[in-house]
Amino acid sequence: MIEIDVHKELLGSMGKMELDVNLNIESKNFVALSGQSGSGKTTLLRILAGLENAQGKIRVDDELWLDGANCLAPQQRGIGFVFQDYALFPNMSVLENLLFVRKDRELAKQLLELTELAELASRKPATLSGGQKQRVSLCRAMMNRPKLLLMDEPLSALDPTMRNKLQHEILTLHKNFGTTTIMVSHDPSEIYRLSSRVVVLSQGKVMQDGDAKSVLLRTQGSQKFSFEGELLDIVKVDVIYIAIIAIGQQIVEVVLDGGEANDLHVGDIVSIGTKAFAPMIQRLKEKS
Amino acid sequence: MLEKLMALEFTPFLISFKLASITTAILFVISLFIAWNLSQSKSRFKPVFESITALPIVLPPSVLGFYILYALSFHSPIGRFFQDVFGLKLVFNFTGLVVASCFYSLPFMVQPLQSGFEVLPKNMLEASYIAGKNRLQTLLFVALPNIKSSLMTAIVITFAHTVGEFGVVLMVGGSIPGETKVASVAIYEMVEIMDYTSAHIYSGIMVSLSFLVLLLVYMFNRNQSHHVGGLS
Image (cartoon, rainbow over all chains, first blue to last red; front, side, top):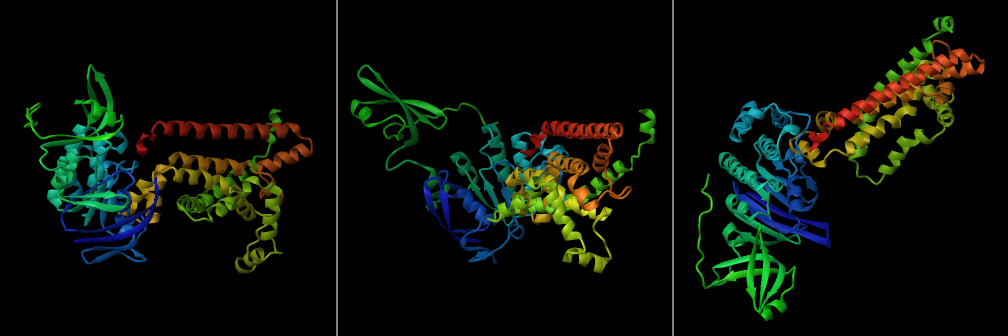
């Protein structure tokens, strides 16, 4: 059980902001931390790691990590941290990176095998691909059998295929070790696949907190389908208007009438929903 | 010319290199901690400490030499302390030269190391702290092995700069043959007695050595910069 109750004044992009988070996290949970950039996610993670100061209290099981002015050093917290930019030690081989944390060859071997890195054990980080580096970083974070694993957008620098593979490996490690995990992520499919709970921060406060489905589904009322997108363009064709909207990585066209076209502006964030039709699903590619 | 070359004394060069080696070794240990602490410091007094360590670059060697001479002499408490407790005389001998050189060359060791430490990714050092390592372990096993080219620059420039110093060694060491008469002082004296041939030979050796040293540093750093991909 992790009890977090922290406050800190931050200087964000929009001036001063109060980070004020009160959360209880059950052991072995996988929590996704989401929210716009500048909402305080990374700061919260760094406070949990002991890399930044804050007021308040953090209790992990029966240990007090933060209690007013008393702050346990990161060295004494027994955590794992996965940075977005890997932060591997370039002077050490893959295996040495792991053993630097703890001289436990058995565990290192087990982790490298779980993540299919055993053959790369003697390579230097500079010779690895981004995905491989992040897997090493993940293994390194698991080396001291952490009570709490923190991941700061671990997969955002990777391409979609590699992301998929690593999501699978994170899940395998989580199942094997049962480590309580907090991961900052923006990717809904990643959040849905990995986490059992989603916490959304906005301006330093918890805005939403629940399971992945209830937080991520955007439909309201009787809507069957609803997407959020950005209006890229409005084109007039004869008497109707066509809106070009970007949704995720795709672009769609939606017919507008004159009134709607006048009301909307290019650059608006819009929601597109439908109620009357049953969506059709067709398989494009079978799961490999 | 040839018989002149054969008859020339090379002891001043030996003294110069001995002085430079010892100074570099001492400064490496001292500066490692100064540079590491300065690079990690967020204190508002950091500019004060940075200015103090950089002072020897801007001060005229005679000013530095005068203060060191005074501080080490029997007239100051420091000099008297060493004399009374350890029986050490610190002026006009080789020990005094080493002490003076350490002050004079300090910034040439501290600054390259500090800038090397400052460009290391902050995350990498934090990863080491999270792995349970303290600041000293992080310095020795993570920071230091990843600033090889700064390390090379610091050591070689400190060495070369100590070989090339003149004003401070003349003031603190005097020019005692076989003890404190280093190459740069020897050249000065040769010119003074108008022995231009010897001065030419000595100066020629100095120019060639300095050029070789700098060439080595730049070649090493060029090779290193092809490998920096490793830092990400």
